[in-house]
Length: 103
Image (tube, rainbow, N blue to C red; front, side, top):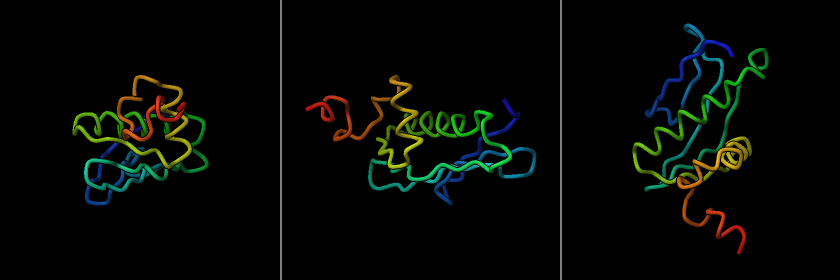
């Protein structure tokens, strides 16, 4: 795991993974009322496979929970992360809960 800090930049609607002064990854989102659409996660190619994308998503989900917001994971990585970490499923926008998906 690389030593990175995750920084929330609400004015830019994104979370950034910082390695020193360098941005090495980001998660972009759109806020619409009480729902956050997490639509894009990206990590610089030389920094991939070090767990940075997971750190970005985990911090973003922690922040959304603290703000009592719902999440719409239109980014495939975010959707996959939530599927692999069901403790975050309660954050999904109501139309995206497993009961609705299975119906």
